[in-house]
Length: 484
Image (cartoon, rainbow, N blue to C red):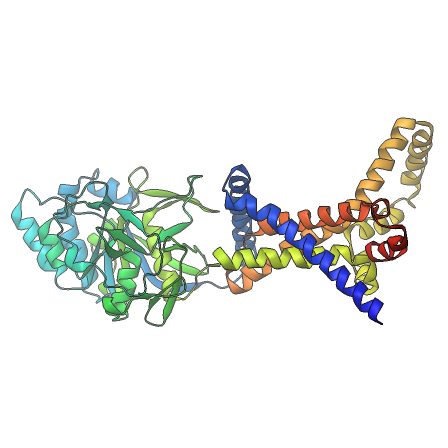
C-alpha cells in the first residue's frame, strides 16, 4: 500500500515537473518579447480573424436586429449633387441638415467632422450654433503631438476613480476647435484610432490621457449622455470601465475590441437626401445619428479584421452598439492568461503521459480520430474493382522499390507519433472557437496550441529516456514500472 502511494506520488511529481518545464519554455519566450513573441502575436491575430469569419458564416441565416443607430454620410451621391467637398461651403449645408434631423427628436447626433476654424461668414457660424443648441449634439476632437487648443477642453475632462496601473493611450494636446462649436455642444469625445503593428485596427481606446486628465472616446461620451450617467460616476475596476450598469472590458492600455457584428444592423443614409428633406424628421426619433464623410477617397478609412477597409465612423458606431447591447469581446489576458497556459501545460502533460493508462479515452479517441475514419473509408474505397486493380499494381511496385518502402515506413511511424497531438489540436481549436462564439470570450489560440505541442514533445522525449543506465541496479525494476 505504501509502495503504491509512493509510486503515485512520484508519477504526479514527474508530470508536474514536466508541465513546469513546458510552461517555462513558452513563458520565457513571451516574457522577453522577442521573435517568438512576435510570431505568436501575428498568428494569434490571424486565428482571431478566422474566428470572426466562421462566426460570420454561422450567423448568415440569423435574423438581424435593426439597431437605433443611423449613419448620415457625405457619400458619392452627395458629392454628385452638391459638388466637391469643401469644408467652408458644406458648413452651410450642415445647418439645414441638422435642422431636419433635430425635428425628429433624436437621442443624439454625433459629428465625426471636425470644425476647427471659424467660417468666413460669421452669420453661418451663428445660425449653425443656434441649431446645435436645440438638440443633443456631440462632436469629435483629436489629440495631437502639439497642443493647439489652449486647454479649451479642460473643463470636459472626466473625473474617473480607480485608475489602477493603466498605461493609457496619451497625446500631448488637442487640435483647436472653433469656439462657437464647442459652446454649442452637449459633449465631445476623441476619435483617434491606433492600429496594431500589422496596420489592422482591432481595438479602440475607451479613455485617453491628455495632460494628466482623462477624456472619453466619442462612443463612450454619447453612450454616457444618453443614459444620463454623470462623468463622475465612470470608474475603472478589474480591467473594466464601469459606466452605469455597463462594464466595458479593456486591456492594460484601456482599449476595447471593436466587435463589428452584423447581427446588429446600422442604417446608412445619404447626406444629400437628409439635407433635401427626402427623409422625414420622424425617422430620426430616438435614433443615435452619426454624421461623417464616407465618399470614396474622402472618408477616414480603417483596415479591420475580416471586413477590410471600413469608414472610421463605422468604428465609432459599432463601438457604441457594443455598449448599447453589451456585446463586447472579453479577452483573457495578463495573469489570467498565463495561469490558463500553465493549466494547459499540466493538463496536456498529464493527458499525454497517462494516455496508455486511460483505456476509455483511448478507445473513444481511436473511434472518432481522423486516422481511423480515413482507414475505414479507405478500405471500403479499395474494394471498388477499378480502384483495386490500380492499387494492387502500385502495391507490387512499392514492394519492389526499397526507396518507396522506406518512405511509407517513415510515413507510418510519423503518422502514429503525430496522430494524438493533431487530434488534440483540432479539439482545442474547436473548443476555443465555441467559447468565443457562445460567450464572446477570446482566448488567444495559437499560444495554447504551441503549449500543447511542447507538452507532447517533452513527454515523448522523456519516455524515450532509458533511466536504467543511470539508476542503481536495485531500483531498475521500480524505475521501469514508474516511467513505463
